[in-house]
Amino acid sequence: MSALTQPVPTAAPARTYPSLRAAWIPLAALCLAFFVEMVDNTLLSIALPTIGRDLGAGTTALQWVTGAYSLTFGGLLLTAGSIADRFGRRRVLDVGLVAFGLTSLLVVLVDSAGQLILLRAALGIAAAAMAPITNSLVFRLFDDETVRMRAVTVMIVVGMSGFVLGPLLGGTTLVHVRWEWLLVVNAPIALIAAIGIRLGVPADDPAGLTRTRLDLPGALLSVAAIGLTMETLTVGVGDGWLAPTTLACAAGAVAAVVGFVWRERSARAPMLDLALFRSGTVRGSAVVQVASSVAMAGVMFGLILHFQYALGWSPLQAGLANLPMVVAMIGGTPVSEGLIRRYGHRTACTIGVGFLATGLGGLAWAVGSGLGYLPVAVSVLGLSLGLRTLMTTCAVALMAAVPEDRTSLGAALNDTTQEIGTSFGTALTGTLIAALVTTVLPDGDWPAALVDSFFRGERVTYLVLAVVVAVIGLLGARSLTSSRSADEH
Image 1 (cartoon, rainbow, N blue to C red):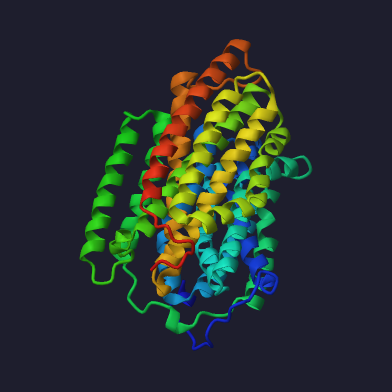
Image 2: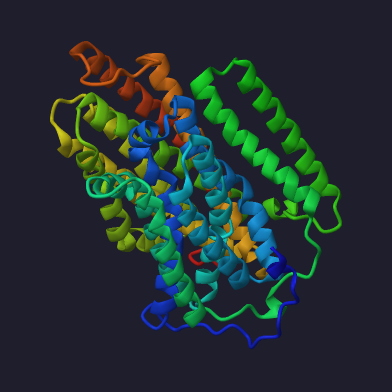
C-alpha cells in the first residue's frame, strides 16, 4: 500500500461526460471491473466438487473456499471506501485491479485447499478495493441526474448479472477447461479494465478528497463487526444457532459493533460519521438495500436447490433458468425510472417492495403448482423488477446524500448493506429448509417423498421471506423522501 501514501498530485478538475455514449470507454472499463469482482462471488460454487477431488478437500474446506472471498470482501468495503476518499479513488482502484489480476494468476501454484482458501481471501481483499470505487467513479462521470441514474443502473445490472451468471459461466467453462482457468481469466480482464480506466477516468481533483486522517481503530472495528456478523450467519446454518462456535461469533460481533459505535461517536475524525444516519435518505436507502438483498439471496439459494437437486437439472440448465432475473434487470429501466419520475423515491420504493413480496408469494405457489417452469419464471420476473427499482433508487439516492468528499464511503455503505442482507437471506433460507425438510441433502436423485417434502418446505420459506422482506423494506421506504431526483444532501 506504499503507493497510496504518496502525496496526491495536483490535477485538473475531473471532467464529466454529457451522455453514456460519450463515456463509453470509462463506463465499459468500470463495468468490467465491477462484473469480475461480482462474478467471483459465485463463480467457483459450481466447481466445488471438482476442486474437492483435485485438492482432497472436505466439505468444511470447500465451504471456506467460497466463504473466504465473501468474508474479506464484505468486511473491508467500508475501510476501502474510506481509504479511497483520502488517497484518490482512481489510485486505489488501480491498486485493487493489479492485486486482483496478479493474485488470480497464483492459482496455478495452488496444490492444497488451505492455499486456495488463502488465495480466495486475498482476492476478496482486492475486490473490496474495487467495488465501492467503481460505483463512486461512475457516479462522478456525469453531472446530469438522469444520465447519472442510467449509468448507475448499468453498473447495477452488470454487477447483479455477474452474481447471477457466476454458476452458469463456471459450469459452461468447466466443460472445456480445468477449474483453475476460472480464476486465471481474471488477469486479462483486470488488465483491460485498468487500461480503459486510465484512458477515460481522470485522476481525482485533490479538492474532492477528504484531508482528515484515516480512523484506523474505527476501520479495524468495522472489519471485525461486519466480518463476525457475516460469519455468525454462515456458521449458524452449518453448526446450529446454539452451537458454541455460533455463540462465540455472535458475542464477538456484538462486542465489535458496540466498540465501533463508541469509537465513531468519540473520534475527532470518524471513519463513518454516524450523523449521516440522521438523514432519512441514507437510513432508508440502507434498510431497503438490506431487504432487496435478502430477497435476492434467498431466491437464488432456494432455486439452486429447486432446479439442481429437487428437479435434477444440470448446472447449465439451472443457470439458464435464472436468466429471467437478468432480463428484468436489463429491460426494467422504463419501469423503474418511470416510477421514480412520477412518484418519487418513497412511493417508488414502496411499489418496488410490493413487487418483491408479490414475486416471493408467486414463487411460493409456483414451485408446487405442477405447472412447470413458466410460473416460476413469471414470479422471478416480477421480483426482479422490484430488485431493479429498489437497487437503482437507493444506490443513487444514498450516493448523492453523502458529502462530496465521501462518495466512495457512501458507495461502500451501499455495498456493505447488500452483503449483510445477502448473508442474512442465505442464512434464513438455509435455516428454514433445514428445519422444514432436512439438514442433510443426499447425493444423486432424490426420492419422491423428499421432493414433495422439499416443495412444501420451499413454499413456506418463500412466504416467510415475503413477510420479512415486506416488513424491512416498508420500514426503510418510510424514511425516504418524495424527491424525484437523487440530489438530497
